[in-house]
Image (cartoon, rainbow, N blue to C red; front, side, top):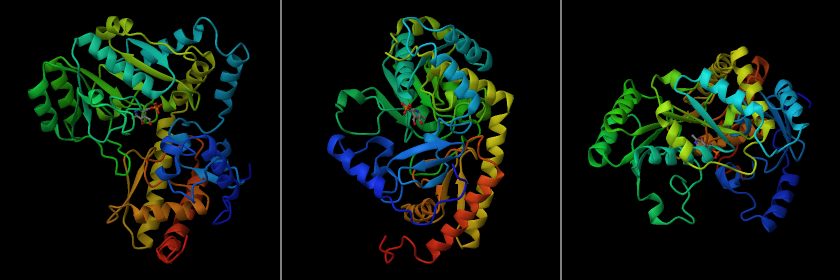
Length: 423
Ligand SMILES: Cc1ncc(COP(=O)(O)O)c(C=O)c1O
């Protein structure tokens, strides 16, 4: 793929044509987080063609610097040669067998050696598979029904946690209660009311809601949550699906300082190959063994080989340190570019998975204009979701993105994307 940036205001003719075809045969044309309404309709391409390193190309032939990385799975860069080779070696021996491969055991051994709260591991395909299973394990272990969830957190598409509304019945959420981030009192109040009925408390390592800045845990918040779980006998579940292995090759809880009983991973675990994992403590091993867990593709050794390769590279190449440094370079560059155009931009959350926040822009319209102007110039920035960096982002690509941002801020100041712009 060429390294030049695509021209400004690329035509999306092919994207639009394919979307029209999709709308005939797929409800809404696209759904979930890639549906146009969740992004920037008319600016984001609707279909992509190929991806390599830190770039992707859409169906109209425009190339973008990729700051979404497939919404998180790509941590080493698209089509990383060592991961592809490891996966291909397994693929050549068959995709789905009647038995698991020995690789599953090796992968479980690696996770239990590497993650301090892991005495066992199980595997599935998507994050939702393991968050839902984790709740079942907590219920099986405690004999209780209730679950405390963080307000604004995402844990997947199953009925107990989906942010959507369609198809739900009130019973789906009967045992779900919400606490607020960095508000231990809100959690304590739930424990006081339902302490002898609660099976699990779910948390993320830091708060990463959509459409809002990311927030780190306040001092003592997560250890306080852990102490409450211990006092009331609830299972503390870490949902580390968003950034697991990205902040620390041994799990994000090491960065924020607490010890979960059960942890869920997906996204970065296999650099884009479909795989999810749950790990847990010995105290939950027997309950875990009693909760049925399976799927048609879950034994697929290709993804597990990709995970083994990815996890080894993450540690060998100190990838979390590298992507943090690149994220800091990006953040500093973007914040300075914003200042030069009279805006205050804060890159919130971890530098390798930052969420941008423009001061005084609570309805996100300015951020949407800025991201649209950047996308038209070849840097794929998202205004509603945290971004992701990969090990394929180097100084040159970060600096190129900062240069795009500079132009984008200037274009916004000149009225691009504004009410009178007609775009
Ligand atoms: C924190 C978190 N939990 C759970 C999920 C669900 O994972 P999946 O989309 O693979 O089912 C996601 C997906 O974005 C997530 O970010």
